[in-house]
Amino acid sequence: MYFQWYPGHMTKAKRMMQENIKLVDLVIELVDARIPVSSRNPEIDELGKNKARLILLNKSDLAEDKWNDSWAEYFKKRDYSVVKVNSKKGGGIKSIQGVIQEACREKTERDRKRGILNRPVRAMVVGIPNVGKSTFINALAGKACTKTGNKPGVTKGKQWIRLNKNVELLDTPGILWPKFEDQTVGLRLAFIGSIKEEILNVEELSMELIGFLKEFYPGILKGKYQIEEMEDNFLCLKEIAKSRHCLIKGSELDTEKAARLLLDDFRNGRLGKITLEFPYNYE
Image 1 (cartoon, rainbow, N blue to C red):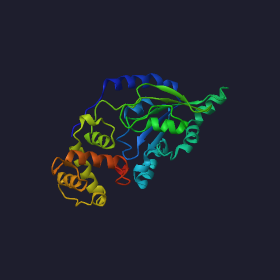
Image 2: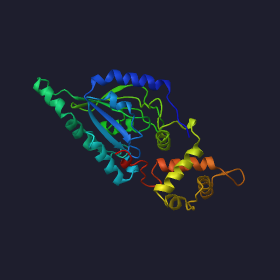
Image 3: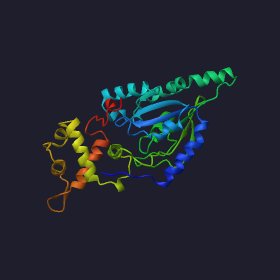
């Protein structure tokens, strides 16, 4: 599969981030814990240099615990603060404000020496589409202050959110980067739902996922759908269609419906905790 997607509003969003980065002390970057490197926009490092950095491994409840721990260590070694969070259910949210203050301690000290007291830490929240930024901000603020949705591109413009007297957040639209040098990155982003489905062949995508699951999580498809994990991925998809009674009129199997069902089960954790990329590939 080949992925290329960069709508015009993303160019505008990137320009807006470049203009606003000078206003903030900290960049809070949400990544998807299932694909912590592939769900990072590589341009953020350039945008955020000379700023304190905090990585949030969001949706950590959907990824394997042992790999969440390994990824946290991976980023800490590279001088990021890291917190594992599950924004939907509130996991890890309570610890965030303390981590923000700790990450910005040097700035606070500098301010104090210059006689600037009680200025709130200003943090820009960044992340690719559908990584859960709005849900995270609402969980942190304790109220619905941003629109949320499970479609990429819900946040269209910037907005400042005052959490309390110590922290102000700048929410930004999710942006992808213009070109995926590595098509595996595009594939992983498609798996988690960060690329609009209209441009994808869901049957091809589901067969790629089947191939990955058979290699790294053998038995998971058999356990979920009561099927044999055959070598041919399309035959596996047909077996899922049969098992879940995905039929077009009469008795013809509806493999597209089965593909959507499989992707939905994966994205919502119904196949269990699954990590799609591993730190040892990036050491």
